[in-house]
Length: 471
Image (cartoon, one colour):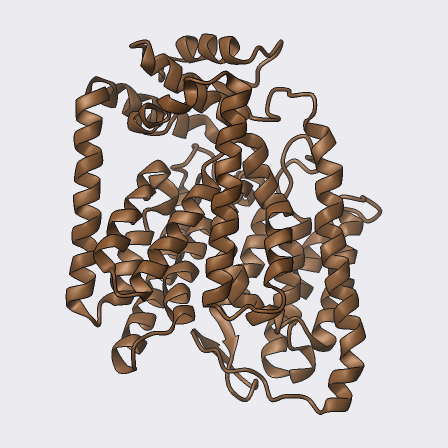
């Protein structure tokens, strides 16, 4: 990815731009903290599709396995969930455990604890993993002065909070991704590959990590092969563990997974990919995860992600050893495109986009500057008048999205609009995600935020700022 910056502005201009920049950064901090303060009380007391709702499923599945039962049977896991933490009324989708059986088996030490104590330990581990991942990633990408602020804000952001409140694995997966990148950067590809076996926790979302890492290292053929060997060895160990503990449940897992895929779009409206917006159109994709429009979008997204990954590999083959930001870009930008088109991804899964957010911001948020930042704030405020405030009709939303896209393109050609796309992308990630009990529209606007972030990550300014360049 090209990292050339726009020409530095004169000192007088920089002094003039400084107060608005500080004001905007304070507004972003306030937005993150304010949304967190607004959201947290809505999760108390615990309710269906609320606090620890996903963790309740994982906990119940592990308890069922411990007693020799089948966690993929709806009646069995429903009874186990109610035994763990009783809900008077249950959302139907919360009776679905779709992870591999070995994931529930590995959680058995946690499920020896009472439910809420187990959830607290799991969440504390996730917070610690997230803080460690942020600190390591920020240091590698050149963050210094604002790294402490980053450590405070990211765990409070809605994407992070949603994962912690529901009891998801995303913070642990992000930590595994960051550690894999650091091991690859430090010339330990076998260890990076072995750690990448964490993708089996959510293989539908994280499967591109291993081939992207191998492709990023491919100019060094031995390193790429050692990475794949490490991944294969760790995966073989997990497979043996699976066969030794819960082999008989694999057919039940696959059968339940196919049933779940056929109806997920009808019971879970808050998906984070573009497919959720397609389903909202007249005559939407439908058909669960396998509709025609969904598959076409997935194919197009994978083709673009592959092109970007191949271009990154060719650039690395021509140059010197890749710097940390180059390797992060080569792996995480194509992964972000996959999350954008993935048929089944939730807003909390977008925590895996954090490396892309840090790349887009630049070290110490250096790209949040100039008139583009101020225009981005105005556009985001206008979007807030549509959602969640509701003062403008929903029909205005496509116009605002078109203005945002035009601003991103114009920002490539006009130094005066530098930072517009970056600011819109980050502000959108803060303000647009919607999940129950905050649904205002019939569909989630999270895909719009992810689309803007991917556009800003894929198209970066050239040295003169006068033309667009793909990576």
